[in-house]
Image (cartoon, rainbow, N blue to C red):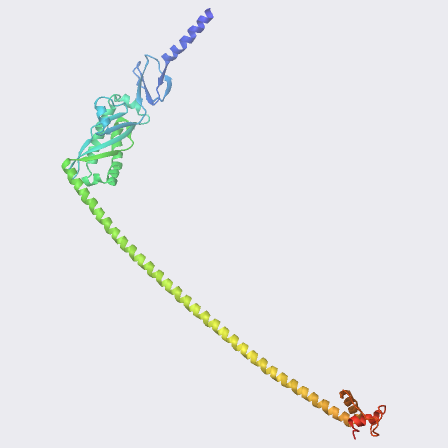
Length: 360
């Protein structure tokens, strides 16, 4: 039982002792520790989220937001909520800033300034006694710097985005130099809206209308000039297209004519060659026929000459008689056998002499 009692006491004592000796810094906060005994004061360390040594009664803790703070000068619905005390610890809503430009115009400017506590600066804020007032001090310092720096713009500058952005970039280093006294640093300057006095707004709207009308007229002029250029280009393209078409048609006709002439020339040359070749062939044919006829006639003459020579030689009579007998075509021969002048059929010599003669 004693052991169980000791265990129970031990288990109960551990959390109690831990709670008396340790302190938790919540998430998104910076812890600042103060020593109450001995006059040491604020410990020069910014404690991050987590558990840290903190003896109850000996140490005192302060917590500052680690998140980015927002300082708004805006006439929005959030401003109305801020007027009823509903702003958070990192947001501060205020009325728009009233500025007088260099050209003596009153203007209301809605601005938002995001800023944060510097690294290692939280304990210094507590040390300087600004724990509860640093937001008001930052607000007052920002108002003074912005009124001094943004008032360097003219009404025309405020209407131009580039001029506003340039002025904000130039103002940011000046603002951070001034906020260094409170150990905070601004991240940016955001101009949300600009509002002039009603009379100036009417003039500004009229001027803006005239400017827009001038821009419209300029745009219409540019449009007309571009249309003119476009029409000119279209006509040039059409003329170039027509010229190219005519050139191609001319080339086509020239090539067609050239090929027609070439074809006609080839046909004429072919006809001339055909006629020439045919005439040469006919002439050669006539010559060959004449030469052939001459050769035949020469052969006939030679044959007759040889025949005459053969017939004039010895035995020619006999040859003539044989040819005559061979060429003799008598269907029938009637001889009077009672005539003593008629030779006997068996007497061939006398029969030949009777029929073809003696040849002497």
